[in-house]
Length: 79
Image (cartoon, one colour):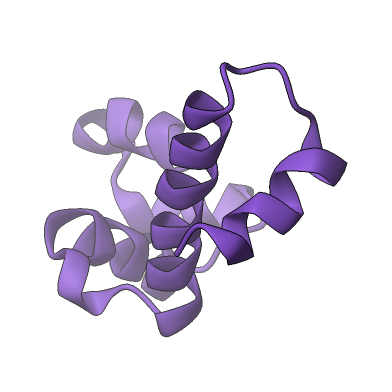
């Protein structure tokens, strides 16, 4: 929805588009602010980003052959 609003905002305006979509204008503006300033991300999103890089590292260290059940214990051992 945010990308659609981005493409149409010059023609119709954010508020009028949000009136037709199930998204409030403050939610749209907050999403755009978080894209611009990563420090505004919630703690959960920051932690998820960190964990994604760690899971990818463990998966690459194990030759990309293990699934979630095998990589999960390795993640905690290899810290």
